[in-house]
Length: 158
Image 1 (cartoon, helix red, strand yellow):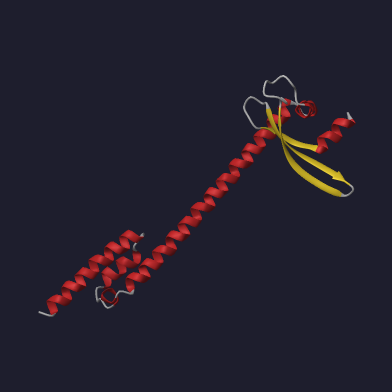
Image 2 (cartoon, rainbow, N blue to C red; image 1 turned 180 degrees about the vertical axis):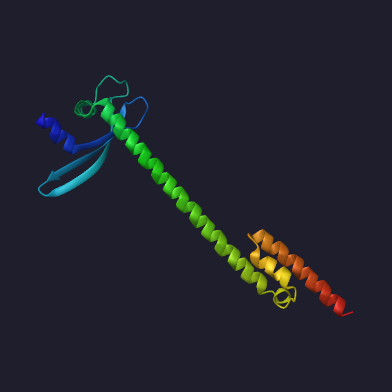
């Protein structure tokens, strides 16, 4: 039994990589002469394509760990991957929103750098541009104000 204990220290938390349970991923940890090394092994059940030669290491892993234990490690690993993916997705969404807001801010700055809009007395229209929730809305409101100012200026010149 002590051999199994040593082997369980060397081969850590195996997981199934397929539904058929014919491929295992396991972390191999070795410590020789104070050099600690970790590597991930992917082990197939068979050593040949005809599935006639059993893989010794696969057999060893399935002897030192029960199928239920490997199932538990697999479930734990899948749950961790799912949580990681959700974290990454949430971070991506937050980054996208930040970039969108930065772009909107720059769009509004560009709009207010247009002389006709900057010099406009229409506070309500300018306020609507400032409150715009996206680029399209801000640009549409700016075009409306710009045309209004151009019309007003052309009427004054008559």
